[in-house]
Length: 235
Image (cartoon, rainbow, N blue to C red):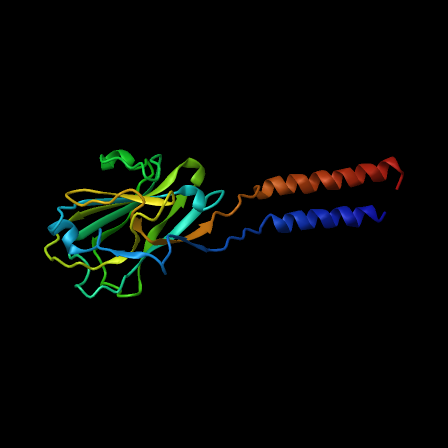
């Protein structure tokens, strides 16, 4: 008889666990903020006006995130406390996508680097230069990224810049190794192991749980098994 409440207790526990989905936000940073160097690409006016840059891409090694699907809620860049003016005053259209391009393997044909799941998260004039602080973009719609499908790509398309500011952000200048790299255009240079130190607010996607009907069937099966056992023993 003691087995019956034990089995019923198991059923209740399973049903309770079925409603629990926990996920903790994890800041994932590419590069070293303390030892990084300053770089004016791509958020300064001189990138377009001085070097003719109209597009910037940076690829981030997917394995750095870990295993499983992640929900990206924001992306941040670190101001290098530049005193040479603010951000560029043009329009920046920025997106994230999953790319098959490797770190240090971005094509000069920018379009071929962009993944099919490309999602625009910003299209406007940049916010004020943060000095030594962060320039953070909160994604209006979270981006779902699974490292098993490729690497993460940041794509920025730039237009209408009229100022010549040289506001810099903390970067790894040829020191990123296999963690991240960029692609630039115009007369700008520096691609292999170059890129902005970047932080993502990444939340592991909640593990899917069975539908309530599945748990109901499981619970019903256990109860039926208890009843069958009682009949067998004449209880």
